[in-house]
Image 1 (cartoon, one colour):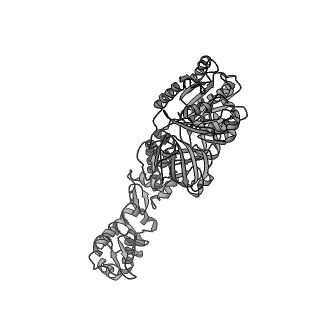
Image 2: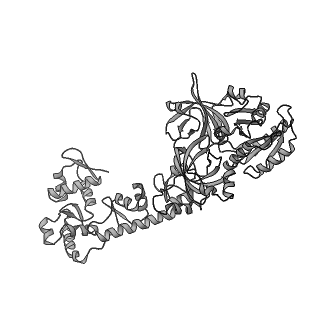
Length: 592
């Protein structure tokens, strides 16, 4: 199925033409039929060709409804009456289509039985040709006599054949254009599914609200389906308490795949009256009003606009919407009919707190294309979660460096260099207490996650010492070498005969000197005042493994040939390493 919206001036026969094409009534309300005036959106379809139509109102007072209908639709049936010619709303609707960047359409000149259609065909085709629609097929028709209807059906068939084929695996974003309650079934919403696939029992998220609903039933063109692929008109019966609050302009999306954003940076393209204003020299985009209405999909929300530079602006929305890089939207000034085309350049813009930040931001935005580029986004931001990049609409350029974190290669290399300098500078300044905790490193480097510290350190010569990151072993100062060598000789034949306080004092090895010796890898303090050789823990495990398991402190002391004080200190050190564990109040055993 393909979905096509109508467009054109009020009373030029859009709804009448759809009745003739489909045999269905597009005007849903009695007031519309009584007045002969389309007020709200109508939905009809034909199977030859396979097209669902969204009929939009042509009156200027209902332009917001018209925008809700054409916003999610990729193609248009543009209608101009032969006996009416090009009119005000013809121009306004064409401006809207051009602003939204719609590129596919068919021109129908109606009431060909009442006036010569040739002049109107020529003028309308020329006007459409100057917009995003470009050259389109044009057909003169009469809904009364049937003149031209076969040709119009054929043109519509060629139009739909030429439309791009959407990705059925794309993330779902269904803009809601109707929401109502059916007795015994609950809430039903309708909309144009542009991409992706909907299925019964599927869980969807109400964008911006974070509430989940379930697809209870699924219809397309009044036929029940277990699965519908875009493009299609769909009616979705929902299960979930949050569904009752849904209205036109809300959106249903795949959970955890979209970010609802309230502030975006955009490129503005003035069209229609705004473009003429700019050409006349009275400002145009440069003087865009501060308060406008943002239209995207079926949504229309108040927006505050802050110009940043030539053709770029920061837009703050009155409520968050599910938006992605490259999305096209429209800003409208209801007071003077000016409209501005919008291309989303950044859906996670930085704060503009510093003096000159807006000017610098404008220069950066001038380099962006609006085409989603995961590598470029990562290059600009340095670090990003993979899920956040996907939610922006860009593909990750490579695998994560840690957990869900992606890193730009150049930025990652720079962080690693900074990490090495940071640790080395700390170790030089504090030789008695070398090494930095991962949390201290995280804060110093401004990293958002401790896991990134571990990933950075894995590619460096840094070593871990008691949970800290330290540089290569420092050189033992000359003044301490003799005293340390004496302790090493004492322990060489009796590895667990730790020197007592008197011996350490005799050698002038105070707490600071022992810390420096330990940092150099010459000694190991298993507890304050208990000093052994660095290999003592492994030797202790070897000795204790020869005991009957479990064993007592007394048995360990005897096996190691040392005092109870030292034996207990060694066992507690091994407990901390996970090499021994307590069985009860008096027994331990070797682990592993």
